[in-house]
Image (cartoon, rainbow, N blue to C red; front, side):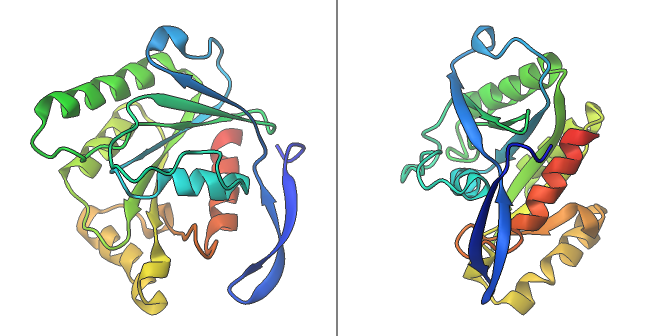
Length: 212
């Protein structure tokens, strides 16, 4: 699955390197499951708390500035967005959760949407759980991990915004989360959409999910 890649020369950590970005050829925004693509094309689901950087990460993975809308109002997106890649798979962006801590209806709607998606989408190959590296893991994140395990889907925890903290401090976070949750540190990836730190590693891991 490399035929659809965009190869771009760029700067990462002060070094010039060639990055192989995903090439998005189509975006499908859907309001309900009857509008979801009707095939079993491989998909990777992105899930994360509002304002954790999902849209910025999608833009970075595709080397596009405005492919995914980066909103200033957390929780505004309520739909599933299917980003169809030339590589032959889709990234599926789910609504951000946690924007209304006390709104049980919205939380229930989100849970129902996730269960509907995981029940219906036989092509789902795994879940990327995005977590702001400056925030603690909460019950919402535990719920996503439990869903992944229930549906026997591999998952990765993608720590975002590591440019906002000291790099040495950031490198300690995977072991901290691993000790708290029992999740292997190898499933936890440090990333920054701003500096592109860890993006090549994440692209490689997504490719592995799709190919398995």
